[in-house]
Image (tube, rainbow, N blue to C red; front, top):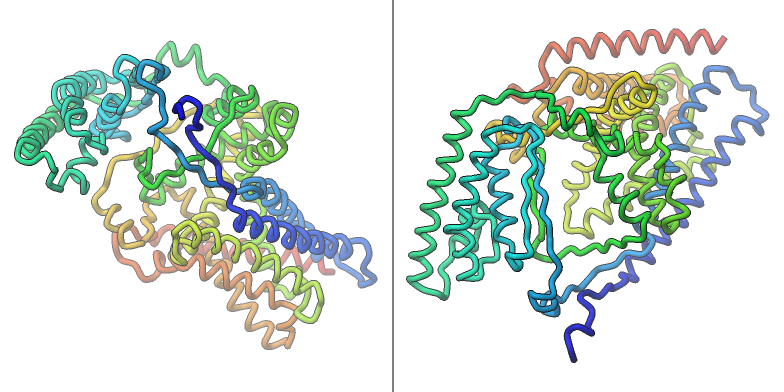
Length: 536
């Protein structure tokens, strides 16, 4: 059969995963409806007298539960019909029939995005296994640095003279020279014998020379950051948002009928440098959060702009992305309101003897167990699950909060859109901490203080709550609040370790710990005072 009549890829529905996901969605949704009924009934249908402090505390917690449930519901669209895809590259048409491909590589600041890594990306793109007359590679340097231009000239000479001919002659699969010479493919004998090994050593020597020249260019260049360029100032952002890639997919592609497919081959098609320390993670996530909230608050909000142009499930997927920074509100509520009420003997959850206690317990365990199942089914471990939970909580109370506030201020005209690059320079000490599984807490006090404050509040709440429950004999009434504090303290153990046990460079500075203790004390004192006044 002619290859032109055969499909290039086939989609396979994962029936077992789809059944598990839909069953979980049904059960979890039912439990959430029961939870919402309990909250509404406690406000309007209960015959018990309720004081203002209890009502206000429950209202805040209920608002957080509604936001959390809404974002969770939108996210179920991803799980409704899970698929895998088989591709057939051997069925591609002849080179003459292949379309032209443009590859755009963007950089902005050599001090944060190492020039050598950028050049390796450029060389990888130039060496792609694609007809050379139909492959065009563009490098955009928003900063307009001379170091990028000079390094680009060196990269072009090395790629044209040595790397591309070597890859084509021996069918090299790993087209990034740095990855090739460090990886398994570059350290194994080839069937081509001595001729291959001789060429390989020659190209490796040329690559080392290329790296040396690029490093000299970088060292001899003066980097002036934060430069304003007329073209950038005049053009600005197309959608007045730093989440340009999101808008491009939503507005210019999917809402105009373009379709995307998910392909996850065994050998990864794309690899990139990821952040390995807390500061860069939070700075990067703050930028993303701000851009996504800008989408949610704009006329391009997926839930408004998308329904007439996309399927309901795709609209929900885009909606979940746009609204997930709002996780900050429920997590802040769950981290301080039940704890403050616990210290003052106010129950915001049903007691253990109440039937709705099972509902709240089921919702909590259902969420955790589904996340565990997804992590394990994708090759992760329990440690991966714990780390994902921790980072979700850390992001929610820091960068999601700041990113959302940043977007709201821009929306109100109080701030202009800006773009921050993430530091991709490798620090040896930070890398060691990352490999040891320890968090490097070298970040700004604005990002670090909320983590320490909330951890201290939950430690005090857990100890004080357990003591109070044992003295009053009302442990059953406060069980969920005690358990919630314990769960947050457990997930926040790295913060406790960073405050008390660690002595390395990445520990939490004592000044931040002292300040956080002071702020926590003031908050708990004032909060208890307000609740005592409202109780009267």
